[in-house]
Amino acid sequence: MKLMFISDIHGSLHWLEQALAKAEEEQPHTLVVLGDFLYHGPRNPLPEGYNPQGVADRLNAYGKSLVAVRGNCDAEVDQMLLQFPMMGDYVMILHEGRKIYATHGHGFSIDNLPALSPQDVFIQGHTHLPVADVKEGIVVLNPGSISLPKENNPNSYGILDNGEFSIKDFAGNVIKHITL
Image (cartoon, rainbow, N blue to C red; front, side, top):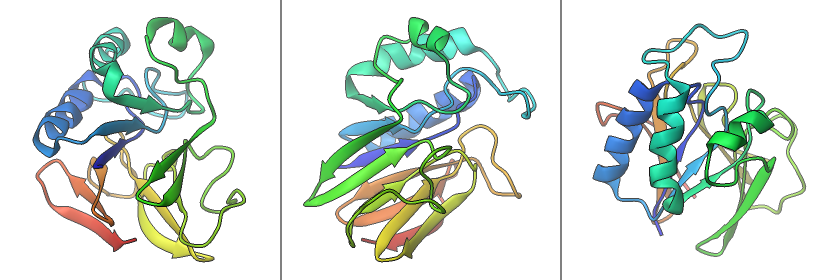
């Protein structure tokens, strides 16, 4: 079961369209959105193609193949526009015999892990920085941000397939990779 992870859309229809085009190429079984859907947030600049209503419409059309969690910039009013649940702080995904704890990262995070077993996977967004590493025996991941990457990283997304996690930019280059 191939999974695609995106995070930190921040209302950018332009970058969401780029991510959904990659989803058409990658053909994941499920698209996992790690929060910060519609609002750019008070500390962020307006992202390219800022259009929260357009983002909601595109995600609603994709909704049946989507799993989502709430980010720190998401509010109940956002849920009113979205036709899929996104207000949970985390979702647990069972994938190829492993638990994947997926969250935005403003509560539990790579620096504040929940109770997981070695070989489990923890994935977050929030920092806008790509991560593929192991910490205390737990695989820790962050696909980066599709719309507002930080520290000179490219706009990026993550793919989990056949025990391999890759973070890719929109030109198809692998930025980070780890074998689970």
